[in-house]
Length: 520
Image (cartoon, rainbow, N blue to C red; front, side):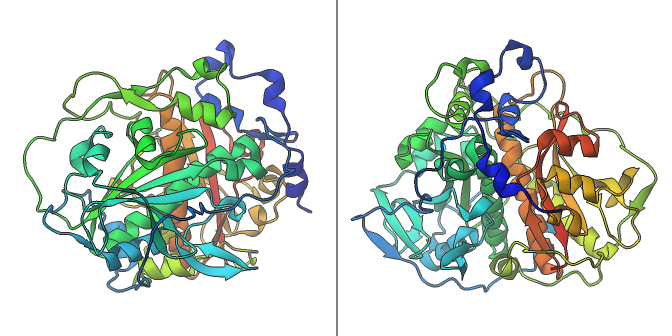
C-alpha cells in the first residue's frame, strides 16, 4: 500500500476551530480533552494548525553573546550492560552533599541524554529520537557543585557540545521549593531540566505535536536515567513540580516553551531509614474546560490549564493510589524465555548506535529476542513514574507466538493472548498507509487507562502518561539495538481506527504511542 502520510499532514485542518473546545457533554467522557483534541482523523488532526508558509524552525536556541563553556568529549567508560541497569534499577536513596560532579561526568551525561551522535543529510542526529527530526526538546542544567563550572543555570548547546550560561548563581534551593518532594533532590550537585519548544512540532504536526513533544521528553529523560546509573551515579526523576516557578528560573514563558520533567544527578548517599519526608500538595491551576477563552494555541492553553500551583500546607505520605490494573485480559498465555546470556551491550553503546529503522525485513523475531525487549520495556517496577499504562504487542511474525494482540504481564514475564488474527493490513491502514506498520515483525503499543471518576492527579496525569510512554518506547529502542534488532516510532496514526482495530473504544483505553520492532 502506498503511504499517504505526507498528504495527510498537508491536510491537517481546523476541525477543532469549527467544533470548539471540549464542552460539558464531552467533559463526561473519561478521555482527557487534550487527547481528543489531538486525535488524528482522515481530515487531519482535530486541532488548529497554522499554514506552513514559514521556513522550518531551528532545532536549537542560539543565545548570541552569552558565555560558553566547552565540554570535554564524552567517554563511554565506566559503563554497565543495559540489561543489568534495567533489572537492578532502584530508587535513589539521596545524594552525597559532599561529593561534587566532575565536568567530564556532566559532559558524558548530556551527550548520552540528547547529544549529537551522528549526521545525516547535513543534519545532526541525536541520542534520542524525534518526530520528523524537529527536536522540540531543550536541556538545561542547574549547576550547584560541578568542578570547573561556576554555579548557575546553563543551556546545553548540542551542536557545540558546550554549556551556555543563561543565569549566574546558585539556584538549587529555588528548585527544591518548586517540588512536591524536595527531599528527593536535596544535596544533588546538578539538576537537569527538560523543556519543550512546542512550536517546533506545531510547524509540521499542528496540535498533535503536543503529544510528540511530551513523548520525546520521555525518550530524552530515559537516556539520562539509564546513562547516569550506568556511570555509577544516583538519579531522581520528577514530574510533579510548580511549573511557573521553574519556568521563571529558566526564563521561559511556560506556554511556547515549558518545563516537562526534572532530573537530579550526583553521587549516592547512604540509605536512610525512617518515615518518608513530608511533601507539599500542589493542585492543577484550573479545570480543563476553563481554558476555552484563553488566548494561544490549544497545546499552550492546555499546558497552562494543567500547571501545578501551591494548594495548602505540607502533608505527609504518598499520592493517592493509582487505579488497579485490569484483570487478566486473555488466555491462553505464552511464557517468554530469557536469552542466556543476556545481550551485553552497554547503555552508552545502545544509545550511541540507536537509529530509527528506515525499513523492515520480513524475517520473524525469535521469541527470546522479543522477551528481552519486552522485559526491558517494562523494566524494574521502580522505573515507573506514572501509573496507568499497559504494554500490548501486535504480533505479526514471531516464532512460537500466534499472530494477534497480546498483553504483556511483567510479573510473570508472559504474554496473555487477547485475540488471534492478522493485524498487519489493518494497522497499515490505521497508520496512514505506512508500510512499516505491517512489515515489522511486531508492534509495541503503550495504552493508557482512563478509569471512571476523576483520576487522582487530574488532567495533568495525561501529560505524565505521555512522558511515561516515551520512556517505555526508548527502552524498546535500546533493547532492540542491544539484541541486534531495530525499532521505529510510528507516531502518526488515526486514533479511532487504530483503537478500533485493537478492540478499544478510545475512551476507557487509548493508544498513546506505537513502536514497531523487527529486522532492518
